[in-house]
Amino acid sequence: MLHPHLETVRTRLRPAAEEDVPRLYDVLLRLGLHSLPNPEAFARQHGQGVDAQFAIELKRNGEIIGFSSLQHLSPAGHIQIGIFTDPELSRLGAGAEAMMLTVNYGFAKWEQVRKVYFSTTEASLPSLGRGMSLIPREAVLPEHLFFQGKLWDVHFYAITRDAWLESGAHIVNRLVRGVEQHDPEVLRRGG
Image (spheres, helix red, strand yellow):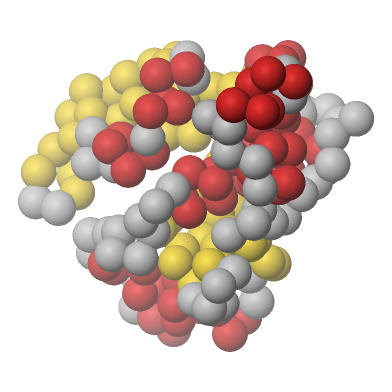
């Protein structure tokens, strides 16, 4: 049974509140999403169609470095993750930890979820880290998104519940306990 962890030793997810909307808007602008509605319209639309939304905080100082969400829970057992982090503040893997926590939350919260989907462009792939090579890419839409002044391919990835139970959940448990992946003692004990 999965536990819906919301924090690791250094990163915390907390439910996003109405007072977080201006910061979310700022993060999206800083990422280059200039097609947003005006701030008032954005605030009115906030949370529509979202099943869960979190502010991503650094535990050492409480600074919000971004937001993650789960939306479009389907009867087929699919849900989509969104993660947006301020590139200047999300160094040292906090964004990757937030993504792991959010995926884990989706599988833990909704037993019917079979797949967690997300999409990204080449602009964001490097910030997602080495773990992306382990996640199957399901589709690519060539030149589908106009972002930061150019057309980008959109890549769609999916993580199945079985794959998550096999490896992802163990990684999250290690992050929650504060055990580094490369810790020789953990590797010797196998977990």
